[in-house]
Length: 248
Ligand code: G
Ligand code: G
Ligand code: NA
Ligand code: MN
Image 1 (cartoon, protein in one colour):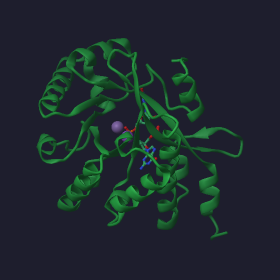
Image 2 (tube, rainbow, N blue to C red):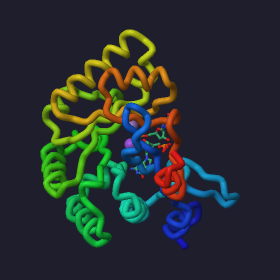
Image 3 (cartoon, rainbow, N blue to C red):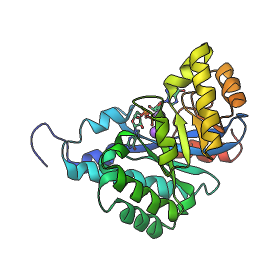
């Protein structure tokens, strides 16, 4: 056991669960992939979001263990779902480790995963710091077949210049943009960003889709994929198995 007020690495990893939120084609019918979202089970059996567990992580070694637990769990569950893309959130700290790409490729090889099934969701903040090195890492990963998505586009600076400069495959439109699509100006931004992304050869995923009206707007705007409570929240792996057996 480590010091007072902290939770041991074993306890943290024991409580960790990986949930999966479906990503569907813009018609809402084709189940295309999942985003992995970290959860933790409390002593009473209730399930908490990532904040609950991340707050307990106080040292780098535990943070590293948890980050790599997520990747191994995602790859392992993904073996059952070869038809789905598995998108994993990668923190800036994890992505910027000098051995990140080599370590990821080693895990994928060890587990027998298909690199083309794995997608990394990166934040702008994880890329701009040490930009040149980040681009090199992204290129190494993409040459190995792994896909890269730029997450939370529409928050922060979200420079359009990045869309041209970054070696990415996908853009994830943040929920805040999707929320505004009932309004003229926000709708125009979503249409323009989607059209530009498509012209640059990127796939576009809209996050936080909650209503049929949003779905219809995003489909017509040209978003390839949709994700949100309208379709499903993040669910345990067993639910994904059920969806794939026809219970969609
Ligand atoms: O469901 P939601 O509350 O899961 O997630 C909240 C935030 O936590 C999001 O920004 C999401 O990207 C992030 N997050 C969720 N799971 C992971 C994870 O496994 N790793 C990292 N780095 N971030 C995660
Ligand atoms: O930052 P990132 O995009 O990885 O985080 C996704 C977050 O959004 C997670 O916390 C996830 O649980 C949450 N989320 C996913 N779909 C919806 C939705 O339709 N509505 C709301 N309010 N939150 C959502
Ligand atoms: Na994400
Ligand atoms: Mn996001």
